[in-house]
Length: 97
Image (cartoon, rainbow, N blue to C red; front, side, top):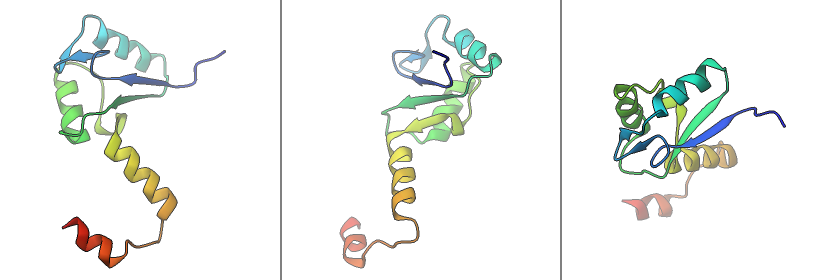
């Protein structure tokens, strides 16, 4: 079986408390050099993807915000794909405020 893409969890696999684990930066650089498409996944909801990417890049990881998948980002993409062109009823919009 040929690997066509890689999903990597951030916390506990690449980092612990946002500090890189030994060999993690080198491993991610190797995957990039191999040309494998990859995405970094996290259940973190307290930081936006850009902030996560900045922290990781500052630690040496070759990543951008586009490489990060968060639960809110995945949910938004799913809803956009399923509800494209539709609007949220006014009662539901008021309930959110």
